[in-house]
Length: 318
Image (tube, rainbow, N blue to C red):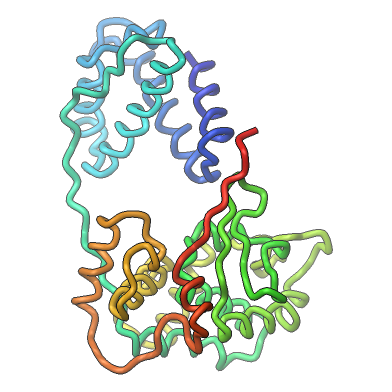
């Protein structure tokens, strides 16, 4: 049974191009269910010896176990069951089992909190704050926040950027250059200047090992993590005295909301679906109106179009 989980994770790596964080979450959830099937005979009768023995009833017992015994939130239970649904779908496709036992379950309903865009005036204050500190870290932080806000790049993509991702001559970033899916992200002129200055005056002072390729480095000269990025933004929020709850995702979401507010459609705001556009639109209506800089400042027409819309290229599956 463990072998099938390992094959599932290999499939996610090779075919779905999942990030390390996603793989870790899928692995944890799949093995957690496996351990449940081996150590809860009082609930399911006897240890499960093969995946084909997992019935909808056992899956339902596991759902209730997580909710009632473990005390997981509905959102966590829903996520873990979604992982198992994907895993069993994989087993069906591989002809290991005949039917997916999760399909007919009544999964927890999750009420998603509608995101709220940050006031453009507050965004401006936050983006200008690092410029008050003439240090290598401040140059890094300014480049980080500018890219998050003015391009709408995903947080995972941002921290995975390498020095090879940057094409200053053409004014673009190549997201995940080692991946099967490479996204070309055009840089507005202001973001390009900030990034170029970081590369010339900031990153060399943060670099410890000459062969380190991560674009954004922490104080140890290693690639920045999601947690590190969140702490950086949190620090500037506190320093600026803003009361808004601002996270890396909030900046990216505000990019989309402000673009839509300026008349772009959801495809040009970095969102993948109308439902995501609806969330951004909701934030647009909540955000204070007024005169403010568009997310992509000083846009030439082509720049604005490219920075708002990510061109996705897929290389052939190996």
